[in-house]
Length: 346
Image 1 (cartoon, rainbow, N blue to C red):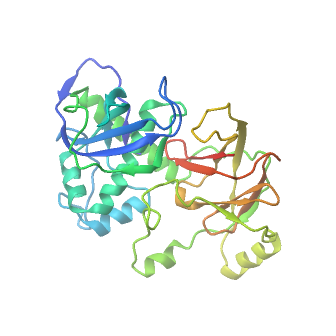
Image 2: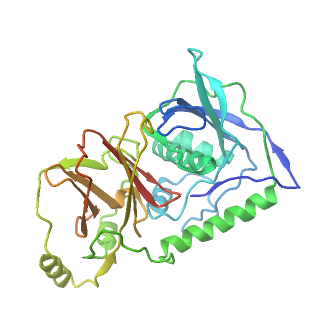
Image 3: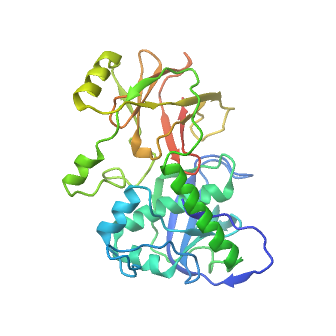
């Protein structure tokens, strides 16, 4: 993700932000003195000096006009995102009822805000990226509720957006460094993950070539929902996992080189009132999977297991949960900056 956590620098330049729309949501985890469920607003703004990320057409020319097919293909492959600059601090504001709420400004380049105006799907993706950027800015275990997102009919809230002071030279260098880091991650140069309380099954390479032959764009968000949290957890009846023998037969039939999917799972008990619904446990799941759509999570009520698999449902892991888990509420987030799935369960 090309968002930037700005630090104090010597050669500062003040950027005046132009507001375009407001994102209204809530915080999922407590933040400082603010409880879980506190309203959270993001003013989405622009400035011509916020860094861009180069996009070239098939002729190798820099793109100025929006090309949906090219842009969405690159996004789906993790090869392009909109750089986002956040204001230095989350600040307090009042909602229309006079209740204390939280607010932050996110700024992108003028060119990209125009693209989002002409394409609603890109705008929805930008909203998710802004939430990622704010979570990165806040640090720690700060999580925003993606199921509560709405767009009030306002260009900004809490008065005019604050001007942001940045070192543009440092900002450009940071953006390039983040871009290189992103490339490394997608090329698989990360350190291998260790497996904790889990067993390994063979995984098959994804058949991306088959999808590309159809000439269809891959989905960028879950159908009918802009949330990265929704539809990640579903409840199922008890089923036996596909055997290793069957996986080997699939591998031979498709003549693909097997590849290991390695999960790292940690579980911790949450203190009371840590979340609004008073979840009992938090699980953190890591692997070499890079997108929320690459994961499938299912809850086996009878066996008290969390079933973790890749999107093709080939590589499967049964993770045993504590016996006092009821599954009455299960909420999950994919935090892109951490490349982790956070699961909260009662």
